[in-house]
Length: 240
Image (tube, rainbow, N blue to C red):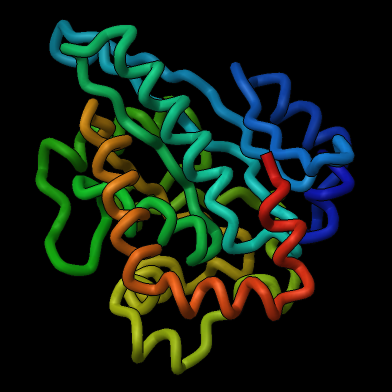
């Protein structure tokens, strides 16, 4: 896991990586058929008492997927299944996904798939949601969270290597969510992370399945052609 992380991030040490890992509850591991780890995401369950209620969140920590498997839905589906099982343990209590993002691709994973998420380009954060975010992130990053800017600044934070998730002018002009991420977190190259929140509900797996079905049906011929022509197509199909 550490070697994979080091391939895509600068300023990362084994000691810090292990220290961060020791504070997590679970890890999603993505392996190929040979058993080699090709991706992972670390997870921590966070509980807060606010107004007499206990609120739960799932915080995503270190997350990386090897370049050969970019485009695979394995992580998204596994993470959504994880959230679903956390939700059904207490179906009547709200459950939140807490994400800090130093790259636009991670932000899009949330923004493209969770109807109720913040911050977002098309509407301001409601005051009650902002208060909830501040409570969660102040508990997680007491010294590094800036509630006014909505970012986490850690002087020892790792940074994405150059070329891993660059934001071009074309991306900014073509995708309002990427443009919003750039405006909200202009120092992402320095390891500054945008604090985000999304709400999980019991309908999310069904909505995601329908969305994937419609996309595959609309783009099926194109996707089949591209995958057949791609030298990494075989690898993408084998990540689990």
